[in-house]
Amino acid sequence: MGFQSKIVPEEILRVEDVTVDFNGFKALNGLNYSMERGELRVVIGPNGAGKTTLLDVITGKVKPRFGRLQFQGRDRPPRDITRLAEQQIAQLGIGRKFQTPNVFKSLTVLENLRLAVKAPRGVLPTLVASFTADRRARVQEVLDVIGLGRKANALAGVLAHGEKQWLELGMLMAQDPELLLIDEPVAGMTPKESERTGELLLSMARKHTLLVIDHDMTFVRQIASKVTVLHEGQILCQGTMQEVQRNPRVIQVYLGEDRETDAAHRTAASVVR
Image (tube, rainbow, N blue to C red; front, side, top):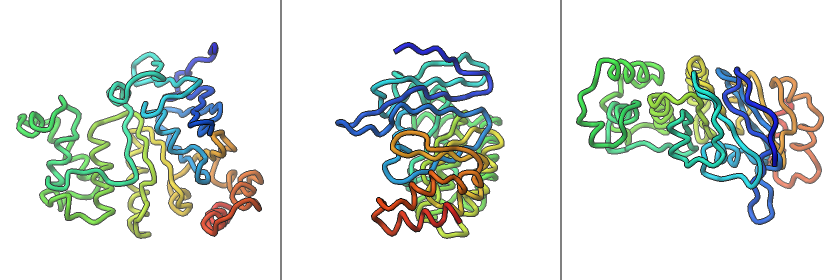
């Protein structure tokens, strides 16, 4: 397949005609998607729409059957990342946070962040290496952003669920990726924790480009300036939250007669409310 288009200067990511096929099921079906540098984009859609598969493809965990992906790091030419390994893509400046917090529970908050600060990899070398003033300042900056300064010396394992999520977001920030992929960051949180997480993501968006997936529409309204709706591996529509809420195709997808679960109806009611 020949590709004619090129990533434009203000874009950080371009997904072109990407198809991912799992034994005949097209999780992504000729998907075209792009993001501009510095934006916070929220991707929503019903179960099976292809949201997590999109993140898997961007990070190299899953390879597309057709299509390609381009990433443009700051002050770098566009790079075709379609066939790169996960580690190579991460080194280019793409970071990912999964739904379940992944922190070192037996280490303190401060030690977790020290491990994550962008530096030569390896747990032991990072822990014993002398901390430069720049690295100390970076850790303190992240602590301030995530609001865990008072718990810097607490073990990560004793943190509340929301605090573990904030610590992992901080660890992701400390790695200083240009594009952050964040999967359902408020799952299992209280309303107060969700609101705090939204504030944290908006703060992170001042320095990073964020792609966020979530089902909580109250949370989505809090953070989203632009929303992309996926359905059956393709973009159903995208625009502001108000535009998406009024779109008849979105209403049909969430409230259509073929929806079988109460959860789908509750989600739809949140979307169109």
